[in-house]
Image (cartoon, rainbow, N blue to C red; front, side, top):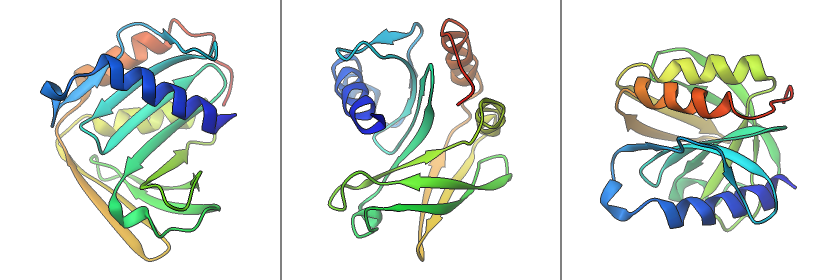
Amino acid sequence: MRHLLLAAATAVWACTVSSAFAQSWNVTAEPKTLGSGAIVCVLLYDNSFDIHVYESTAFLVVQSEDFITVTRRQVVADVKFPSGASGRYVLLKQDEAENMIRLFPPTLEDLYTVLDQFDRDGELSVSVLGRTVRIALPDASNYVASLKACMAQLDLEDI
């Protein structure tokens, strides 16, 4: 189910965000209803990082060619946020040939903690199976506030 949600959200998001927004944050101001009926709020940076929040799940998506060879399985990734905080998150990869991984905060409280880590310029670092991807990110405070406002319109369950 999570795979279908990601595919549908990515398609919707691609239609609503133009290439003119490259290298910047974007956020859905209102929840979007996907063709599957799922409702989502999304925070996106360029084509390398985004956060998807549904009523019953949430995940961070990190894209990099370095992830193509990461095997299709569930493992734990070490993540360091722009704030300097770090944590370990379950990683899921749908297809071994794709360049994206999904990281799942274990609870809604953890998701809010993660969101608060993007309040300054800094680097997002994701290490998995000996590979480390680093993404320089600008301060997302205003966009995170908009994402939280979008999330407030969802009937969030503990993820």
